Image 1 (cartoon, helix red, strand yellow):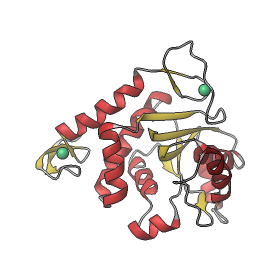
Image 2 (cartoon, helix red, strand yellow; image 1 turned 30 degrees about the vertical axis):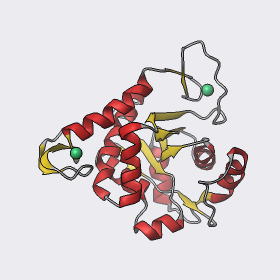
Image 3 (cartoon, helix red, strand yellow; image 1 turned 135 degrees about the vertical axis):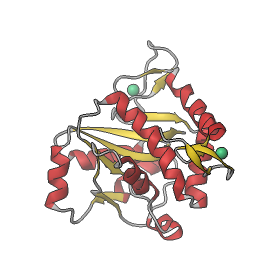
Image 4 (cartoon, protein in one colour; image 1 turned 180 degrees about the horizontal axis):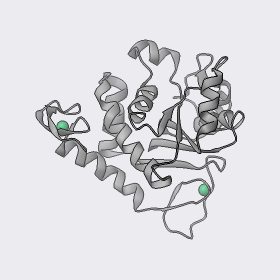
Length: 231
Ligand SMILES: [Zn+2]
Ligand SMILES: [Zn+2]
């Protein structure tokens, strides 16, 4: 991990920084993710459970989704700041948090596909960039992690204000495979052993479910969801 002088992208102080954050800011984020690792996990869907014998309701239709942390505390702050203020430098600490989870799952010699859930056209226009694609790019600094963009949004559906059932219907309408993704991308995807579909906040899991199913339709490798924060 590189440590050098710079401006912390969370608090704005000029000090020693790592992953674009100062030590207190980085520590705060790590602390809020630790909470997640103290839970037992459902080995079918990855949901945190109070103890290993708890019965899981598999909220997200049985798709395995890795969660970096709960949507609380400093992790929540980080997500909100990244999405609302347009500080692109926060893609780096977010990518680092995600890559730690990927390292827990696969050996670092394994070729991995990173597939971002595309953001809505509206937020892309407001921000000027797609925030999860940016995280994917930061992840692909590691040559084993291949950023592959095969999904796109369709329609103008905003999922934020909807209830669970409505979200399920809307999310299946809101994403599709890109009308054209090259043969090169498909070959790259096929050369990977495992794919992680990445997203920022998971609420009902319906977005990740939809996106994982779409990817499963074009490639026969293991596909997991990876979200930064679980609401
Ligand atoms: Zn800071
Ligand atoms: Zn489960």
